[in-house]
Length: 540
Image 1 (cartoon, rainbow, N blue to C red):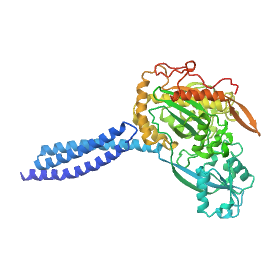
Image 2 (image 1 turned 90 degrees about the horizontal axis):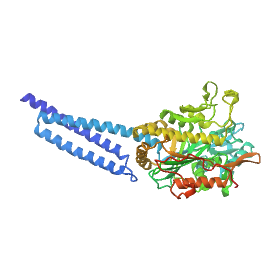
Image 3 (image 1 turned 90 degrees about the vertical axis):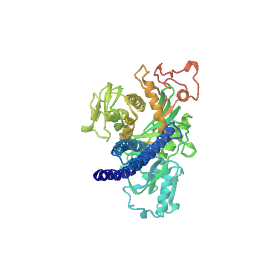
Image 4 (image 1 turned 45 degrees about the vertical axis):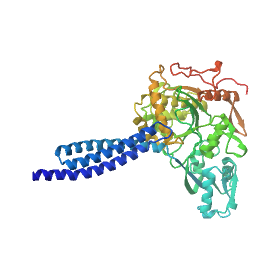
């Protein structure tokens, strides 16, 4: 009897440590679950219900432990140990996976954006430090809302005791950089991503070789969204392709405006409209003085906010959300999806994601095929032939920004179709984990969580779709004509074409009801004809 009591005493000593471990595990579990609370979703009830249930189990195991100690029977101890170890293992397993998911989600739904501004001078300048700029004129953008070239610029001025009397204010970057190149000013404040930001500007695409950085400063700014919509109702999103040398978007929130797509999506009808906006489109720039006109990609110099406001002014469509994706992120995203199927309209070759030819050249033949990440990026980037690198077979075609825009629309559509093969939300999070550093968005965590319900319904509805498309897409086309002004090429759009496009988007957003003679088929069971709205002959 003495030995049995000693064994039971040892068992009693194990109960309390196990109970304490279970308390800690339950707190960890509750904290992991709480991340998914959302006032916009039914998930909120599930989250709090789960936490309350977890608390009840803590109480039950506490009573069970007290009862086991009082009874001091081996059978009671064994039952307690088995149950608490099973529950403890289950809690830790679920908590681990929930945290894995939340970490992936945090990468994409960060509440802050990082901006970076730099003070630059010409490389051939004798200026080697900020101290050498005394009595020298420095260019700064006059737009007070420009975080990198105005707000951060003034912080650098304050920190380095630069005389504000030496600051020369400019309404546009073109004017400021022209003066810098012509040595009318000695320095200029720009985004730290100036190399990619001005890569498509014919006047300053060599800026990376021409200038040097004297000072650089980063600043985190809370992301803003004016939308109260959830992803369970029709919404619009601006997709901005960012072509940068680095994979991560964390170091700067600038974009080069090289690829712009305005997308509307209706989760009720599973229909999307996609408009690619040519980068040379001549429009009023929202952040320019008096909204002076320029190529739309010039709005990128003022940041995402300037680009969004410019496109909203152009289309009169309120942009609910924006998503920026690094072109290198496209490679990772497509590979994570296992490739995408597209119909390549012509054989071509292109640089790889590091912009290298030679042994790295990407060759793609005409026809329907599955492309991997590198091939998809080449298809998205291709704009003109490279006979010097590719040979006749892969250079015998005509392409431009419009064809590239259509290629990019086809890629987006193919990606949407690939989502049909995803079987669980954990796969979505795995994808987010892979591309998290390459994507930035103002869609917050709560809104993203509500989107999971939409995605689940989309998967269920997709089983009833008779055609191969997961989501019905209307690929829009902004018609216009070419025009040279002061030796610079611009694309002048037809207002009639834009009116048709806007009408299609408003119908999809359920802002406007379709007229009988222009009615689209939004029924999930009745696929519509995928025609090009906005493409045609117009008078104005």
